[in-house]
Image (cartoon, rainbow, N blue to C red):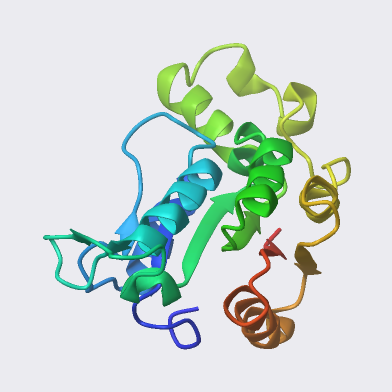
Length: 203
């Protein structure tokens, strides 16, 4: 992603258990290019990406941290790519049916990337951190209902359906496919002005 996406891309990350490696790999240097959360709030990034897209379309953010309202609906920063990167659990918690319908209705195209690790790892981390000797810690992920490798929802299908079929969606399970998929999705968002979603399976 760091090599392919534009340097002024605005990232909204909600990758939870992958937050540290994501941040270390991306090596953000541009102020305002990475927006995340502290603590709780799983699922915030999809709606926030719509808000970021609306703000960038109306406000000139080139002179950070000072922003000026554009004279028209199209500001210089309206060409910035907005990328929402989320975990598979955070994606569901964000009510994607509402997010991708609103993205389509409001014409706020952004790129979504789901890092699908096959379950809700944050739940397991909390169990182990808070009650390592408790009953839940002794039960495997499948028994707790947080292992979704074989029974997870069709994330791409949910988003495409919510967008009335306008969203470009692709599921990727091989690293060799990722670069071309990112380039295609970026073209869809920036040139075709449609939303795009990539589900990257990492489990």
